[in-house]
Length: 382
Picture (tube, rainbow, N blue to C red):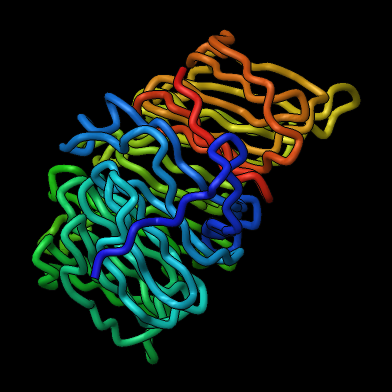
């Protein structure tokens, strides 16, 4: 039964009592945790609808649901997905609740491919695929899910902690049919990633070499053939992402590194000045924020291209609370407001944020979603 999202009577002072998204701590890396709060969406227009293949969210539409600090959100074909401890809900572009799935999710996690979402319980076994029409089907892993990934073709992977192994990585196609399974006894599996062309599968591992910690990226074909082992040393991988069919980036705790599937080292951008706090990956550049160890300004905001070449760096004492990006732009929420930059950190626009704003999300057309603790959210179109 469809149900329209509730509307506040006072349209000029919309407040929705929701908590949205304690975003994923990718395994052992605390700085990946994000906090998204109360959510109202207004005026999502134009390019978002084109990107997701249908009309965008119309003006003055609110989405209303129970708040929880573990909620996660994603955009899907102009609508909104909410993954919460008590289940999953999808609202269409007009604010109607179209899909509800009641399921217990201790630590909700959700990934979007653009036209589907993969919803799972990090540390649990619940997992399913959904699109704008509803829930497609459930996946039943044999053990607790450590991490997951999904590509633009809706192929997805799960890393699980099965008894008798240090890690198991499983690849599924868009029909949820198992296509590849990799088991290890000598190293732990952390992350995985499927190439856009579905030709290669990456797995990030933690193990030992000659008595020392040795982390690496393993490159497999979809037939399970190990093609390359790329050694990272003591660097801890926290994210892997393809930039095209054969090239990928690895964000580690001490640097961003760039490789191809043949194992060629294409470049590196090191966090030599401090400790990584946050990062975001765009179409042709990476942005990261470090807290500096040296005397002087506290923070360093850096952009680099996909070969590790620094595009620009900006030192600041502003408290930067959130970093987010679209295909060609990056935005920060700081103590002084919301600033949008191009890839060279040239300011494009500045907004005065509300005092209670705690988070921002940039979507594909440069629109900014502003999230607040007790005043809802609003979209700003760059």
